Image (cartoon, rainbow, N blue to C red; front, top):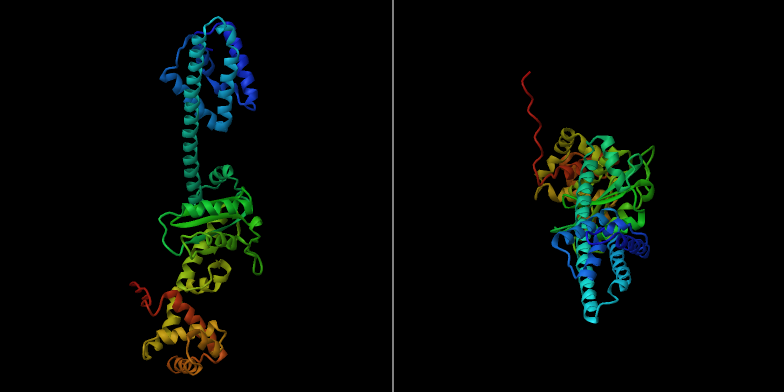
Length: 409
């Protein structure tokens, strides 16, 4: 093994390596490299390894990390090998005086110390590189899954090491902090532990995107069902994500939007778009709920899908409210509270901190200005749809979008 070892020395060192491997739980002998000849040379001749030999041990540490051998087992192998080499030395050193034996022991200990430090350093260096590489691969995979435009076979191959089976249905949850955070890494780390414990370590990914925390989870594990006839279950994903993030001191109040479960690789992108739209819609509609389910926003999505028709509805029904003293805002707020309260004037008054008489007066003003009576069921739906449309468009705070100018025929 070493240039100074005889054939007999080679057999002795090979036996020491095999025994050390057993002591370390079966770590391959190859992980030792030329470490044993270095020990033998130090003990026999007082020769210390050069920088190149120590660098070679560092390389062995890197290789061990890449093979999945823990640093603890690797160090056990090196320490056991040193002990066994020293145990085989008495025949060589028997005739030396005490000072020579002490010098040999110090040399062996020094080589062992340098080698173990180099091995651990190389192992840690490789571990950091693997973590960075995995984080990069994870981030790129999540980006492609959420975009939904990557090649299917490529996605399936890249998702497999992360435990994602893209033939099954998944759903996506997005968590948005209520206050701006310099980094959401701490929230992601805390949430990942809980999500993995709750749903298992397969078919789950926790990542970040645009300042949001993203959770991709298997629909079967979250209790969600794939959209079908009727109202499907959306599962516990939103509650678990919101509950855990709310424990953190920073970022509160968190809002979580959950997309519906959809099958296949491109189903993840679809669920993500629903969750993203949910966050946007909840902010625009000033919803109070901290957990937004995609199915709860279906009405808003229908209204927002045809913007020209929505603008026409708001313009035709609610624009006359701008003639009221104080503008359309107070009357629009009263209408919104009235519909939220189930069209009960007393509950509306309590919500707005007004008298019931003031509420009924405002509703009467709406009727007079618009021609639609909030107290009449036939008019109520039109007014309610128009109020929701005004929220979606940000009116009256923002001007209504102008219709496109028709081009020449």
